[in-house]
Length: 398
Image 1: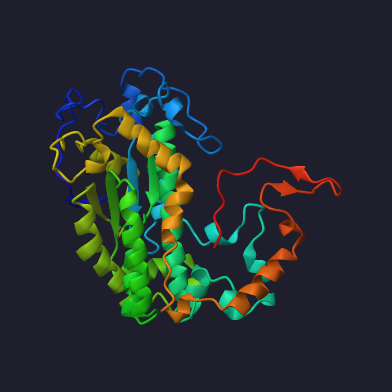
Image 2 (image 1 turned 90 degrees about the vertical axis):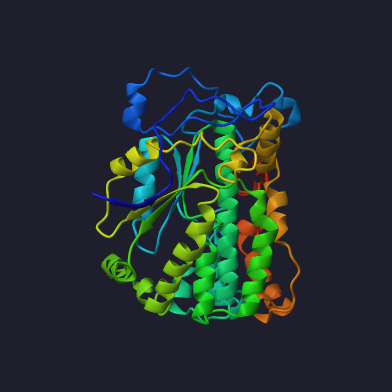
């Protein structure tokens, strides 16, 4: 059984509360309901079919007859599960998403960068290319946290979280289904700060990281709810040992590193995010039950923040349907524009710069692979004829 250490203000569910914003067409409202509560309620009218946002653009013309808010229900929310390493976030987030009828987004990894759309893992080229242009993932970081590529690794992890969060928002706005994510772009800095504190990376890398963060983070809609699974550092070490993952016994996950992560979470991240989202913090030392958390979530009143200047839920108080359509078009059609915000020229940090000669060797090695003979969306799998597959809406490169 979990014990609730800290929670946002809780009220009895009141679905009859109306909109209090002047000239408002729609404000997303009503409170999250778990499976048991949904089963006890009258069956709601069917929602419009999900829009195929993966393959199609959501255009201005389409917005005239495909209203974004018509798909929303009480569970059209963004929930982020946070916590230290080995806290059990994946299992908890998956079970929570299942109970709430939401889509689960597992924590992103460097596979986002290294496994290309044609299925080829760029790690296979490491043996043939210079060290500075080889892949570097969480296993490499745990084994060698002081490596020259560690700073670039953390920036790439922030990029992966940012990309996944855009996908989550696009899914919610195009289907009406809520989403449950493990960590988010807003909490990624706790790793960066812990790395700097242990001299794993330089302060110059930190300056680049925050320049990128400041240029990108405000383009996203903050989550409705953050759930933090709290574990003391000693318990985290026990859980890491129990998982018996060889790379986690490396040099990175030291007591000072884990302690700094905890400090950044509690003193900085949770304080800041609670001004914009509901916050539930649980003592997860002995684990817990998803059903108990669901009951606590059902008591939260997301509908009470209606004042124009109230920061909490501000991102989700859009005054007109056209504003919802604009946000939906941004995340559905313009993801590549948001990802291009990371293209900030900084040439004053040597560990983030790849030499032209090394990059050329890497590109030549990759180009020589038969699966990279053609651009994404094309292949010659029949042996003779060039076949055209369906081109993706966008392709992201490292």
